[in-house]
Length: 397
Ligand SMILES: Cc1ncc(COP(=O)(O)O)c(C=O)c1O
Image (tube, rainbow, N blue to C red; front, side):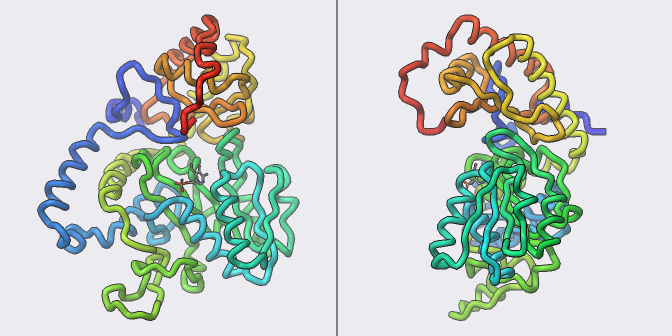
């Protein structure tokens, strides 16, 4: 049984702050400072370029991939880490399209994160409109899948509302019609129990800076179902994915296995932080983590209900139908969130009118939730949000 209280003290969160924004950026472990210092001094400064061999930098993309495999229920050697999530969406979607190239449509929903849709839109241009994109309501996805759909590309947890797709059901339906799936797990990995293996997902991608606490802009990951790995051809012929990169041949020949999905030199300094952040996951039972996350979000909702504010729940009321975050439709949401942040309750705002709160049990407990509610009450009763009216919005909301 996981004792979640043991993790709270491992995280560095400013005293007095309630951090409900792990769905955007996870906080650092306190020990990360020492870890990065050690990397700088013992690896980079001491080993210099030798570090690629002596410290195994070249192999880390797969080693860290295997750490993530355990968190998302993937077989060993089916995940590679590196690059940004947007790049990996491109890599996964294009590779999936190549496997199913006779079909017409990329199917997605209007709850998908815009970055994924932009990547798909860019691809359509690249393929000179050979493909089309269909964007439907999340509830309409399964009924829209047909024999013309090449790839169903979805984010499992809606970044706005937290609504959760049934990965297994959607994937099964896609397969019944001969379509492939690309799942974006940005808002799932590290807060939901996932089994890529059981759901039979074909491709998946995700980031490590939200619930995996890898740090701002930490590397993304890509999964390819082992049954496709021989057949799949990456969209980006990366030199790190070459069969023998240090032969420096001018002809691309893909490596075998998941290594072929590698692109270029990863950020080894980010890998150092990520590897360390992932170490704690060895001791975490994801079903228990999910239960704790639901307990905390349910407490938040029920306590907030008592305040009778003009906030309307935007996420599903049934906790099993949502991911690790909740959100509310809130008029003047931006102003409210700025006032909460001023009082040390950190969540975020998504235009036009959503305020979001994330619930990671690794560094949150019931006291934090009650404190958050007190701050919300104080800000509303004293109309502190009005102090932020007519103020220019910051770049990141
Ligand atoms: C679901 C989802 N997909 C894609 C992205 C884009 O990720 P990145 O900016 O790391 O490329 C994000 C960013 O938050 C996201 O939430």
